[in-house]
Length: 302
Image 1 (cartoon, rainbow, N blue to C red):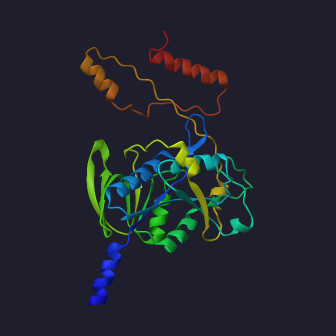
Image 2 (cartoon, rainbow, N blue to C red):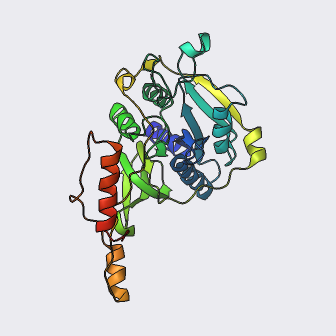
Image 3 (cartoon, helix red, strand yellow):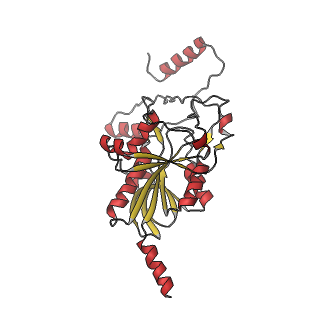
């Protein structure tokens, strides 16, 4: 019995191991690399948990999985240092074992050719998480570069056998055995959840915005590489034909309401679909004629 009590006391005195997974973001206008918005919000929640806990009660670390070498001073290096500027002393680069012997060329699925290999990094994270065995892993819901499918939290939770909670906007408390957090629901509602650890949570876009990155702290921080597992190629992604996304225009809607109340209802109502006409294999003159006809029907041109 004494040994059991001592082991329990030792577990209670050990700090809570928290890992924040971060990725490279991309500015929607300029296209330049930056820290990802959702991953920065996830790191902000972890920093808030560390701040509200007792000194030394939370051990926070940030990881970035990369299948290629990140050179000092490169655009990737500067983007990742945006996380260091939030108050971290170091950031761990989870890389494959083969990277130490033979550096790889950075591959982006959006710019990669069909004959270039696409590197899958989630097996590296699974191997490293099994080795480190943290109690809590926090990440963003969707990346801004690559496929951006949002499947990474699900793949990690399935491989580790951990519970996954999505849409978290706040971490209220964590006692080492259970996590209490707020989950975002539609129409601004919130739901309080109590999750047994170890667990993996993904952060919603409604979470508090991340703090501004300090330039001096970002320069002082260290990017440390850590080999973990073998390199894995995504054979399915290599067959994808990826092209830049185009924003689809919304269907024009003519508001005929007279009162302010009717105009507000018409503006807030969702646009009805199904009445459009799809043009395939037509000439430029025929397409222009159909557009002109639509503009006249909607009352834009008279």
